[in-house]
Amino acid sequence: MKKKRVRGLIRSCRPRKGRAKVKLEETQLTCMYNQLKGHLSQDFADYPSDMLIYLNIKDVQGANCRSYFTALGAADFTVASSVLNKDSRLFSEAQNCLGISGVKLNGGDVEVLGNMVCTLDSSYIENSDSLILEKLKVCKDLSASQVAAMEKLLQSGKTKYGDVTTWNAKTLVDLGELPLYLTGNFWGKFKSKTKKRFLKTFMPKQRKKKVRKSKLKKLFKHISARKTKRGAGCIVGNITQVTVSDNAFPYGYDLMQFNHCLDIPVLKDSLDSICQKVGRR
Image (cartoon, rainbow, N blue to C red; front, side, top):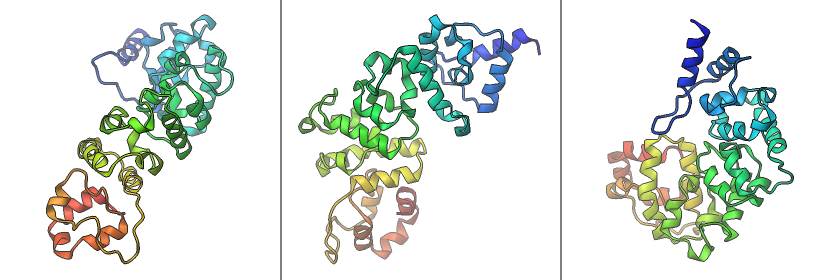
């Protein structure tokens, strides 16, 4: 295949509004980069954003580094093998380009970095402009330390979500995907009815996207956290077929309450539905 045609095919994989992102594997991305060596344009928006992860900073003219990192900000940084250590190298180069020093990122820095914020440690999340929360919504996963920093920023009252005392059901909806990761420190600020109402719409979306069951189990562990006295029996309410069909189920049932509130006949009649929603708890 002629080089010109190859370059055209690569360009056709660039991000475009109104079109789904072309998913490419690391081997394809590195192959694309190798095909373009020596012929790279400085119009980085003309290339697949994920391919930009593999560029050498020497390919980028100094005056164009900001536009490079802006285009790179749309990339999925999880495609790169961890052994390549791309995350730390790219952020170091971004710091040099944008003049970032210390752990406080302003709104402009966060906007340019885009999805790269998913790779940053907790100190940056905790101390940066609150716009970073909006960028974290697209992350495929977040570490415990990142979540802790995110919760600290949220509870500071210095974000668009306001003071903790004003939080309501709309707050949960506006947080997008972030509730999937938040802990009892966050969920304890909401009434049980508010949480249940939210889960009725949030959970079907997560299941439709086939979010890992381990993530959903962790969510229910945090959101259902409560102190139950041993021997207290079923205090949440017996699990019936109607309970199981509720989109918020198994919210409110920790392991002890699950054992106390589920009768064998209901388990037999609703086994498939229970397994789909609960998994191994």
